[in-house]
Figure 1: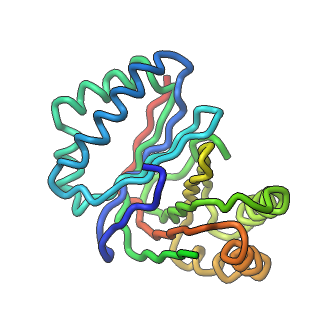
Figure 2: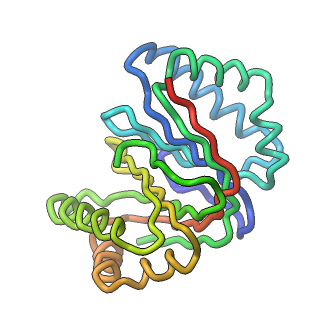
Length: 110
Length: 110
């Protein structure tokens, strides 16, 4: 996901997930993160995502969605609920989730 | 900025800046990036920012603002305009900017 998401013209929604990884359980985390990425792509209303993490373990993932209903459905998806619980129990020291309506967007390409 | 921004209750605005660094001019880039971070903090309406970059040079910076007028003023700030031009000329292979209204937010802290 280390590239810019190709999203449609606004309006659409963004979920801004900023998080600090704990220093444990990297193999499990990577496996589930990859599975969640795959699973999100199959959800109705999913438009794309951007994600990166620095060497200090601080990461930002922004996923894009057609509407709030799509975001709510994804948050409540069964396998994703399990992953969210593991995130709180093991993988994240802290995180924030912000839900925002994208009103304008522009790109630059060299 | 590798930590979660302490923002007020929504609504407020987010500028989601996703970008791919070119592989050149790292010293100049770092210096100007630090200066822009400092300068943004002094702008009216600035609420905070989160930023990270992976080893592959893909970065995401999300800055938070009180309203659209604050975002417009920052985009047009003189020293920031110069930095934006250098960004296009030298520092970024590509980038996207999305302006979004944060409607909901929640945190988790271990």
